[in-house]
Length: 262
Image (tube, rainbow, N blue to C red):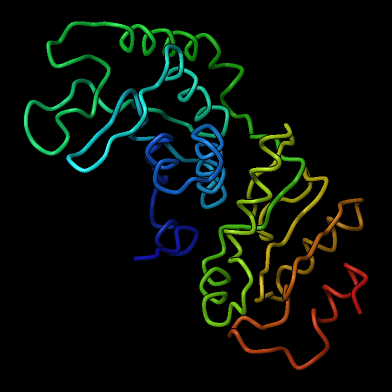
């Protein structure tokens, strides 16, 4: 079932955890390659809660009876773990210490193999831990850089799109295309909610958010007046928080003034 991680569910938690299996997720969804897929999922998670952990970070080849993933090349296990830290994870735990000897995941590999002999993955994990420990003073308390913010982490807008999509991609589908472009071209981007601090951004892109709440206007207006660029996609601001069409010319007075749309 869909869950509003930014809403009450997330507010009741000390932190959110998100499992990272880049090669598995890319095999299932094909969103630009396993490195881009990992960056996308981490950025989405960060928009929900800010701080998060990775309780299961892929360490090797994974399979179940009906499928298998690619095997990380030498050095890639460490690279994937570093990516999780660079994208905002406050904690990383590798899955898993050793693979199971029976059950559906006997060939979902861990840090060591079935025979308990330390090999390449063990060495990579050790190197990662030592490198993170050495750099902890430079990492703790930092925030992930974002030049381009993509409006995200809004459960209501994602659900509202489903009620009347008329051929448009969902907010997340549209955002994924832009995120992939930014990732491939070295542009620092991520997901952010209008309720969050927008001051570090150069531009804010709103991907088909049909619902727009008045309480978001002040922060977005301040962002624009301070030199930020606001980009609205199709149908943004055409409905109120009840998913009803607004009773004025879209996208409403506040967004019209900010975007120059009449």
